Image (cartoon, rainbow, N blue to C red):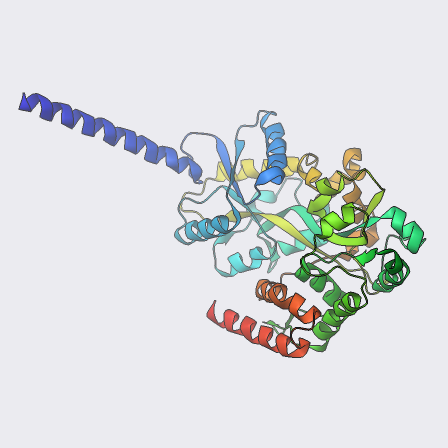
Length: 418
């Protein structure tokens, strides 16, 4: 009896071992190693409704019956970065392709964890002339292509056409709204309890105006933020608040805009679906507010398809991945319904896209040349520190120059310890 029980136990152990081995091998299907399943694993941090739209595009591609189908693996923000960093170091469990932020291409490349796409692009439709220049250039490091652009996300501006016609008629006719026009609108609308400008994501507003005023985020390869241009940038927002032309901290700018209480609202292209809910007035979308109408700067980011180095690199899969990315150049309609712009210029031949409000950015040379993507070293640190204390400076709770000195020191310390 004991022998029977032992025999049964041994059988169970063997079965479990086989199952575990199978599970282990199955787990390897999330790496770039070809385990027999012809599947491309795409890692992305795009979750929620935006991720659903990307999935629709992927489903369309898979319906063309390619040799290798694409499977999207969605991972939440911080977890995505942490997991990607972990597999990048070990070069095991690496996805076949990952969609990373534009500012991370140079960082990952400096760590030696990216492979160049160049050997796989010959004979395909993927080349610099087929993409928005600023978006393509982000993926270029020392003459080699380490990123292929996917979409553009931009800090644009939505505006209430009815209120513009009432308080600053003709201001939006050229598609460019200046801070001078915002102040003019504020003066005219204040008596009616209408705000000229909605101020939501501080660093985005700061970054765009700072660049427009001639600011730079790095000098001689080192981050800089403690300068007179930064002071002038903060002072402009402080003036708008002090004059009563801008919302106060904590107020829901989106709600105020949707209820007709704000004329101009700088926001992301990703807010398109929210704007489309508006039925009470006519709204428009254009460049983020400009300091100089003759020198338009439009802050943006361009997600990049990146090829991480892997011990299990499979050339057939890489070539299949390139075919998928090449297919997207003409077939990205679902993805960009999120409000993003495509980076592939062939999409300008797509009438469904060109009717979308965000398409203003790509339809003219003026728009394309205005696209500015910041990838300076330390920019992410500056971004975070400004975002944390910008309202305190605007409200006068801290001295602007003193706070900028503190931010500069914090950024320097973080750069030294990275």
